[in-house]
Image 1 (cartoon, helix red, strand yellow):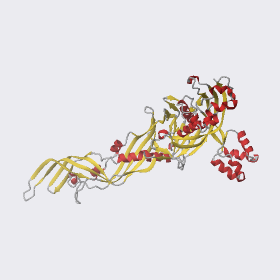
Image 2 (cartoon, rainbow, N blue to C red):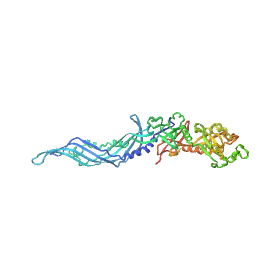
Image 3 (cartoon, rainbow, N blue to C red):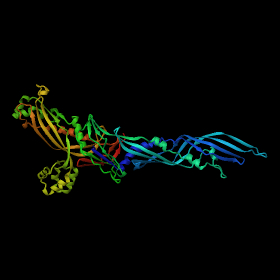
Image 4 (cartoon, rainbow, N blue to C red):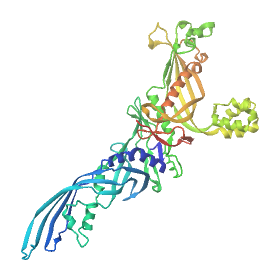
Length: 564
């Protein structure tokens, strides 16, 4: 199953790297310490005077308590996608300018000197011993290039999406550094030009391998993304890995399938999943949008079901809730002898109860919507029909006959019908509602269980409009929408009022209950369908492009970071 699919292009990958990885890695790198090292040098000889020669052996150098000074790594604003041992990784580069290290220098060695004393009668001598020398050592480096390769994957045991480190490396170049003047190594390579360090030994000392300490600092999981979206009130969406898994098409972007669907208090949405939703194309390198999402209508149905399970679409309306309270009094329908069967209850109020028989369901079909964009286009096409066309503002139609009947009533010439229809035609999400309206006469002479009632079956059809992105409960990023009522129908079902012809009793849906049911629906639409996104991020509302396709909503969006 996968009811949500996502494609992330280079712009999005770089954005995520900058917001969630680079700062964390820079913070870790700033704690980098120069690694302690033990260095040996081969035996060597030197002469301090023509009359003596010293042999140095068992030389050992310990560089310890290393620190790094003035180290300021910075993200290179580039992520390179590629393969490493057959696995797709994303490599981030960090550059640091000149910096210094500070070590404790401690050397030990054995020396053996042979020679002759000076003077008119030279005397041979031989001395030996062990010596040590300590000092500070501060090599300078021209800079460092740090590479960090990460992998993006879904971890089934933890139920989370993870960004984990696969390997790291740090390459630095040492500048010419003067080794401590008191070190015996100053005699390692001598000549007529004076004493200096052997280049091979100096190179061994200067070549600091920063790879292991960097790997110790930057390893494991850098970022975890929850595999669910919680709307509260027991409603949780499933953002675990979908059927298609994670794909890296041509190593140029990411595509991934997300299961979707919802649960209420641990019970999963029981509907048969649709075929796996296709993957959206990865935004082109030239596209400034970060990502492309497809959200199946299955997700909207799951939201409807969760609200239905929670009882949040049922409602009760009492007379005090109305602007005209008498509409829910029996007296209104008894006066004038209209419904004599109600005379025994003339002093009582009526309570209206709306009980859904099933969760609302969504279908995709051709609709004709007259929103601002369509109206502006039509006004430009037919300025002489401005007055007639204005009556279409905000209307929606599910079939051509209904639309053409309206156009005919507005005295719009038939020659313009085709253009008006083509301009307003689009794929729409149509929602069907099935409920009972129960009118309960609150006869206080009876127990509540025996209150008379009149039952109507009501069906309602809406078109989802004004799709947008917003913040839902728990600050979840959601696909939001409004319900635009297209039509409703109510028919009498039954009554417990003796002698009442319920078919002649007004349904009271449009005047009494529909405004309150509208509020419930708009609340559900404002909560919206949660979308998988990292904590701290949100979709950029203003520049998002939302489009309804056959079976899903396409969202092309940028992402912005919100400081918690």
